[in-house]
Length: 177
Image (tube, rainbow, N blue to C red; front, side, top):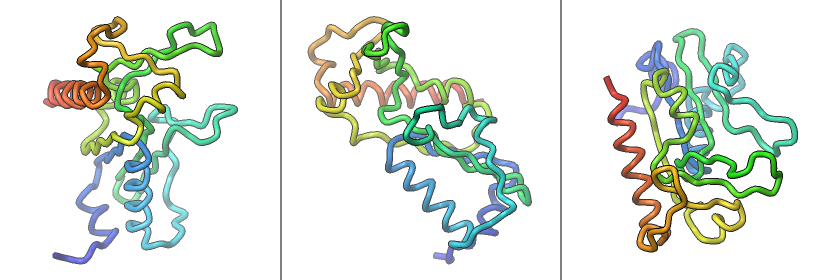
């Protein structure tokens, strides 16, 4: 196998956008690729294009919802968007700061719905956050078909995750030209 060279990778990805969407594993993949492309060195020609993809750090947030950088020499954009479950999350009562969130198992995250048409390569991952403790701590309530899930079989965590993975794959496939 040929040794990785950042410049060759950027040339192959010229005029393309590569997106990692998922949890901390996706973030680490994004960070590793960025480091490999730069050869571990600081590059001052890289442009932060996060606002083009709605990726900004909101006031009070501990960390940003992702990062997006463009290499102008090849017009290559590489980005990461946080979505721990690959589900759309909506506040159930937006006026209540302690509200629970509808975790729509069958809807892709808002980032994908809004920007998929700008992506050439999409790397998805999810897994670690699919447990009862995370659902409870984040106040996520499973929804399916726009309503709270009442099917006990789907409420089993691994089955809910499978519903989401199948839903997002089918949705992404439906968006392909």
